[in-house]
Structures are given as C-alpha cells and as structure tokens.
Image: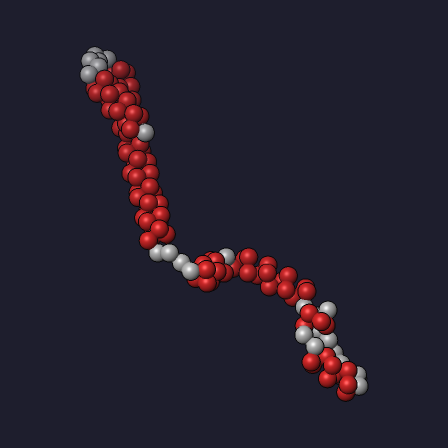
Length: 122
C-alpha cells in the first residue's frame, strides 16, 4: 500500500510536469491528474483504515492477555456470546426430556419413582 502511494505521488508529479499547448491535451492532463489525486486519497484512506484495524486488533489481544479468566468465567462468557448456540442446546435438551406420569399408578410405584435417581429411571 505504501509503495502504491509513492507511485501515485510520482505519477501526479510527472503529469504536472507535462507541458501542453493544445486544449485537448490540457483537458486530458487535468483529468488524469484528478483521477490520480482521487486514487491517492483512496489509498491514504485504506492505509489509515488498515492501521486503525491493526491497532484495534492489538488492543483486543492485549486485553485478552492481561485479563486471565477462570474456567467458570470463560463458560459464562461463551454462553452469553453465542445465543444461537444456546438455543440449539436448549432445543436438543427439550427433545431428550422425558416426562413420567404416574397418576393412575399404585402408591408403592410412585414412592419407588420418587426415590430413584434420574439415571436409574432411564
């Protein structure tokens, strides 16, 4: 990018040094100079944007390196950072949820179900 900026500056100065005598050439030189100036401005903007993005990325990396997280903090941060992933997990849980109804069952079966661990009921 920097090399492009140097080339554009050189091209602008070369175009400015052209001596023209006819009207058509003067118009072409002015048009070319204007296009080169615009290209130079765009290049400068791109360089500035790239520099700003690199500075932002560097600051983000510094923040990550200076603030170590515990496992619990990382898990909490991840769950709030990815709501779509959480929705998918919730839907998967809902698919695997099992509801047992024992309204018509005898009392001894109800008591057995209450005393059993969830893994034993599966």
